[in-house]
Length: 136
Image (cartoon, rainbow, N blue to C red):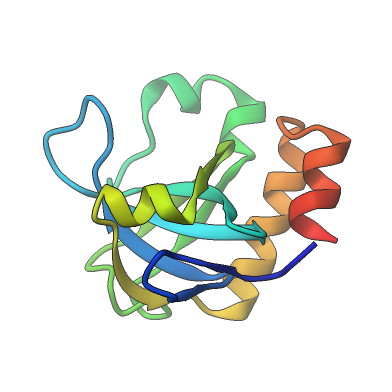
């Protein structure tokens, strides 16, 4: 189990890195935060770049509890308050990030990363094996 992965170009991917990349069904790029890494696979949380949380999430307390507020004061790549959606983390290989042209943007602060990791764990969407793989 490793706390960093490598892309094809040899870029070390570590938890807390922020990337800009495509999202299916969305006409613009989105920010992605690396929450955990194991070998060449990454556990990713998307950052919803909206000033308001989606009504669907607002009406579901468990999903609302899985939103981590990020501010531009602490994260210079943001221009307004945003939310890391930790309710549906997903896995992606570093090679796929390279192929889909994810662009490295920044690192988030350690306290924000700690909050994101704890919220991902709380979300209940990862198996015990995935939790051990990405967060031990």
